Length: 222
Image (cartoon, rainbow, N blue to C red; front, side, top):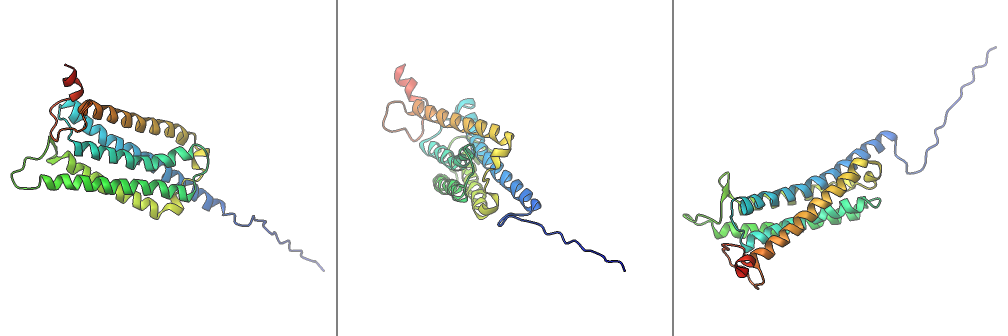
């Protein structure tokens, strides 16, 4: 008589642990969520950079409403920048992730309102609009489009917060840690340069003219 012994193997799992495949997928989505925060911040900076081309390259001075829109672009970029900065120090919670994108949405909506108001100011037939245009649209119109897309992108990130929250994605990615330093430095550069440009345009006056024709700081000196 032959006796066949069947050995049953029991897998020991840690309560709450996810399968390796699930953890890999989650890590990928978390890294993508953090990379998108970088794209958002750099995209806002690039938009302001385009406005710098008109200001310093074509000598088209921005009006107060134009400068206000730039400020709201910077404020909108600060939201995901908060997420990036937090990821350098450790895990980012879903609450912190949602707060960062919430700041981006609110700033984009207020900035879009300013852009929309400027569009309506020049919507009458025969109105040439303010300053130059790019592909037939003035910069404040492009700003309105940018704010709309920014609010949409930030909203999608909020919807996917549970899957896209970076958690500790940066801890295991040297590329993300290096990119964080670069992205935050670029944002700081544009924030400081915009502040300096505003000061040179307004000088030591309490108000800036609605249609500036030069840098008042220098015209007052000379």
